[in-house]
Structures are given as C-alpha cells and as structure tokens.
Length: 315
Image (tube, rainbow, N blue to C red; front, side):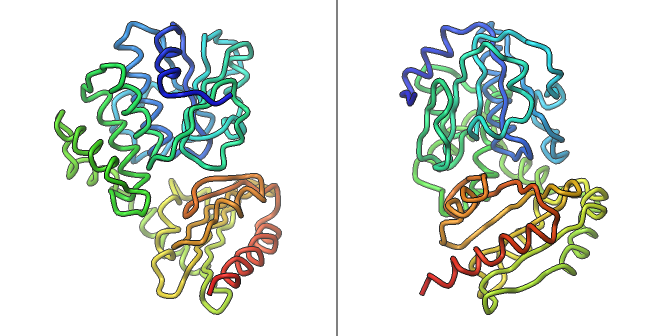
C-alpha cells in the first residue's frame, strides 16, 4: 500500500523497535540512509538496529554507526517495523527472517519498486537519503552530525557529487542545509575516493576484459570469480568505461559464484531500468542492476544482445 510522507512520520513516531535494512551489494545511499535513520530513531529513545546481508564497502567505514551494522543471524528480533530502504523487499537477502511478524515500511526512490511492502513511500528524488531528510525535517528534527553525515553521503554518492542528471534544485537545497550543520564536503569526498593499491591495480587489470559492441555504443567489463575474490571492491570499475566517447551503455558483469553474476548497467540516457527489470533487477533510468543465476559466459550471452538492441532503437 502506498503511503504519504506524513504517514511515514506517523509510523516512525508510533513504533518503538525498528529493524532497518537495505539492498545486498550496498552502496553509499543504502548504508547512509540506514545509518542516518538509525541515528535519528535512537535520539528519539527508540531501539533501532541495521542489518545488511552482504559485505560492506570499506570506503564507507568513516560514517558514524558503521561498525554497528550486523549480518542477519536468523533469530526473530521482533521489531514493530522492518524498514526497507533504497530497494524493494526482494533484494534484502535473509534479513526478512529476522522480522517474520513485523509490518514492512518501505522507503525508496527507485521507479522499479514492486510495491509489495505493507507500506510503501515512493518518491522521485535523487536518493533515498534525500527522502529521509525531508521526512525528518517535516517532523521537526534537528540534524546532528551522526544523522547529517550518513544522509549527505547517501545523496552525494547517488548524484556523483551533484554531477548526475538526477541532481535537482531540491537536491542542492538539501545538500546546502546539511552543510549548514557542519558537513565538510572536501573531507567526505576525499574519504570516499580513497582506494587500496590493490583496487587501483585491479582497475588496470579489469580494463583488459573491455569489449565494445554495437559499433562502439555498448562497452562491457567481464570479471571472473577468481579476480573478483581478490578485489576489495569493484564498484568503481564501471565508471572507467562509462566515459568512453561514443559509448551509450556501459555494463559490468562479475561472477560472484560459479553460477551467479552481479550486473551493473549505466547509460547516458537510455532507460536501463527497464532492461534490468526484465532480468529480475531494477534501478534508475540511467543506473540499474540485477543478479543472474548464470555463469559469466551465459550472463554475457544473455545480456549483451539486449543492450545492443536497446541502443539500436535510438537514433
């Protein structure tokens, strides 16, 4: 059931125990939104825990509360609400087993959300963190750094530091408001951009897998499991090929198990969310992803022709 921002505020006020989660393969918005909401709820005297069913990017570890994020253990935590952020309920792994009787409050900005949560607040915003800022501001909340830093990280990472097309006047106003409470953008950007030497070398190695399709309009990186296992993170790799002149769609397919691949897709305008949905995923018009229960070769063979077909339909 879709609900309003005012109704979200009501549920956050009424509940006392909250289990907060976000999607597997978490990014800055998933973790930033989760930690920002957790910090706010705890300041209201409520119990709030963050469970993420996946490994966490190390470059986000500077955020307040990061060390307290837990993996689900299967025990019934008995929250009043399971709060699912930045995704629908299909991409939270085993976290749902920790709240079998709880109502699901879903806050998301992805157009591909399937709407299956008990309560869904869906809005066209640059990031879920931007939505949370509006929610908390409407309730009269202040923004101490333990709330402001995670929300700023969520917005900054989902907008490419306010460079992507999803950046709006509202996004800039929210960013400015967070700066007023003491956020230092230069410090945060420097921390986010830090990479281990192994990842920098890995970027060079990943480029050896680069292939172009559809007369150079589609670019892809295809990473074997043994390579992925050696990398602390591959999240930034797709940005290396997204900027190639003439490329309209970039895709990164990485094998995480023998018959399981994670896919990231980026475009300069073509709706790749629709493509991701066809493969059981979702996302934004220009940034989407999915998980395929296939070998790397099978995933490549299944996805590349669809991407080539998509660019062929464009003038």
